[in-house]
Length: 540
Image (tube, rainbow, N blue to C red):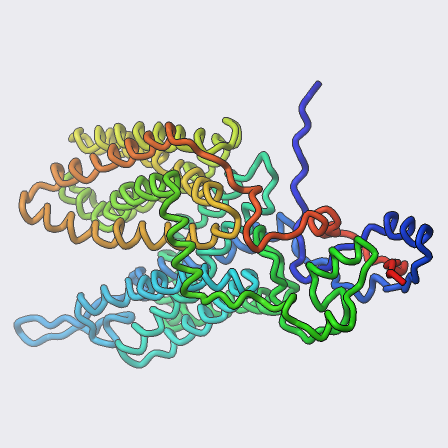
């Protein structure tokens, strides 16, 4: 008999109250003679507008806009060039941000990377807040900050103002980076979870590439300021969506994200009301007066954060996964910065930017999608993910290493393209492990600390360190080979993960768990509005 794939769980609106089991309530009423008040379903919160595919589409567009902004700030049309003067005193005006503010190369570099400060600081903060505030609302807040900060970049009048705005762009992006992937993982079809993550992360190389082109076109035809204003306008509807749409519930969190006054037993204390209603009970007046049962935990946020951090870093599977990711990102970050310059010096490429950029875009998109699809076909488990990570990275390292050994340009391009295709296949699996090796309530913090780690220990220090190596040996081919060899280290670390005892904790309950009754009786997302009253039995 052909095995049927389990249907994906419907998205659950965090404000929705589960429908009581009317059959049970009716039988209880018949046996005990309880009073049965009618509560029209129209009074209950309605399902959210989102479906799983709509959620993926919206998050992909948001992710694309985030990385379009990163490509835009680095594009020649927006970033521009400094004013230059010859020895004879003839000066040519600069262009873009660098020309208008007369920035040094150091200041220009600060502007390009300032967002990283906000991203690294705010990521764990948003992840921690997701324990007490609805994560969907946090994404809305973050996108609002992003929109205002990007608009502020276009209004900037000096270096310090635009640098500050770029930091807040990182703060806004932090909420999305930490929380979007868990939402996608929750609502993707069971047999396509890694493929959906692959589609989401495919927007990274695609967005940066679009940003280069977009920044050049807008900067040349309008003004560099318009590039930021248009981005802000495009992001605004998504910020509004996150703030005002009925929020979705993230697996592992039972809070409603709403702090409205208590108005009815079903809205006053959702978990208590659901449990009581299914046993034929409603809260008494004494219970209503005592709000302690519904009050959130008074546990200090900072204490909870350090407790979660300890749990996270004692998870060996997570630590091994992130260590491999750091080594991987160390190489990828240096490739993106030094690749064109190395290619120009080794192979005397006329259009090194276009060559490396084109290879990265095509291989990044195809490789990321392929990695997710392959893992789903192989059976999505943590052990299988480590096998794919280690094999793909090892083979990719061989092709990239071999590419720099050949002197022929066309052989280099062919081998390097195959290598990058294999290396980018890791994006879906590595994030799948981050999401599934921890319990649901720790997933936002897991993604946040993964992001912080791969930047602090990966791509941020890699570029200057590679520069130091090149200054010492003064041979770009040898420098490129030394850098590429670190991919073998990443493959080796992920290979260790295959032998670790791994447990997929996706279905584990958290300390803020949603009750079994609530999960069982949660209404489908697309359930039609009913006009029939819901009978709730009450003990006499």
